[in-house]
Image 1 (cartoon, rainbow, N blue to C red):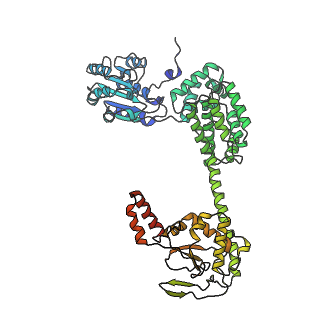
Image 2 (cartoon, rainbow, N blue to C red):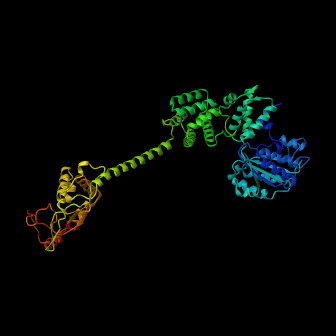
Length: 582
């Protein structure tokens, strides 16, 4: 007799044998007992969770010679035929290979015929989401109002691909992933019946890697028992299934903690020499790091993780923060995505694991970035505190504030004279010296004119000719309340001086020369000079003037472009046109 795979041999025979789907088995059993049998069912869930098995149990329950019953006997002719896939009343259709409209039309033709042996004709359509849109449309009417002797059971792993019109005509049952404990218990039952000795750790590994699917667990058990006929151990399971051993995972984690990149490269080299798949290595690491996160959060290992060593898990969990563990797992998942397209998977994995070691203090990248920002803020606060401390002694030295003296000067305005009163022979600026200023700058300024001459000299020495050209003809009105006022006759020069680059330059020179913060104020003034540094009005050479009306009338002889240039010049520099001696 041919060998039968374990997942076929141990397929559930009735509702009581279903593993991990009690909510579905109880509901269907009760519906059959009360006679509330629907005409269409939709089973949805991950692979290997019992959808097709439940559909066949349902078919036996409806067609058993002792039924309809929630506990089919599995001994009568009808139950035997269904178990052997020879029943004429149960049609199992694979929608992945029979997905077109022609197959559904054939199905509609056979629906109207009465069952051969049993009470119901049961149509099991597996992977129903693979049907085409036309096939779904052809099935709609039959699915909504089938003959009384027909029951449809649709199974799918991708419910979102099934049209809402189909779902609304079915009773939907959602199958859950089977827990690790339930899978392990079933594996223990099967190995005991087969008289195979196993380690609990070996069955735990199979249950974890089955990922909630009983069929996958039985397939792995079948594969492992083929090698080890006497006793199934964890080492045998890891060797056969290509699973990284605990020791390698623990050693890699310790190497990351120790920032030992050489050790990481050595472990990867040994695993590749043994034929280990790199993506499997990364998956094992994420499972172990998840166990560390759970242990840090709860203080104990979760029931659905590996058969870990508590001492090692406790030691490693205390060395990692939650943030770093989450960051490490996220980086591994990114690496798994990169492996699909990487021409050199080994280099990709080595780089990913070595990146986790680049921080000598064991801090994750996000934490280092956050700490760096925090240190910058702390340094700024410390700097501001030092400024405040340095300002207090300067403020205490000055018993009373004073203003800068502006010498008496004469301002000519509409042939009238205005005299600025003298306040004191010596005054100081009212603001204290900032901490950044040199100590010898905290001095007394004799008068505003001396300070302004020093500014002009500084500009000339520093080769700031352009700035000097803008302000050397400006009139100094004085310094009062920490503000220096300049009067301009030409709007262009005033606007240029007020721009940030020139204004900041002048204020920095004022700060350096006086030791105090002095702001610059630019104003327009068409009156005579009020600049203390300027020459007396009677001694000042007067520019030659020409007949303004005559000159402007001559522009009629200019081209249009020349007229525009002349008007622009008059607008910027004024209409005080000077004759050329030449």
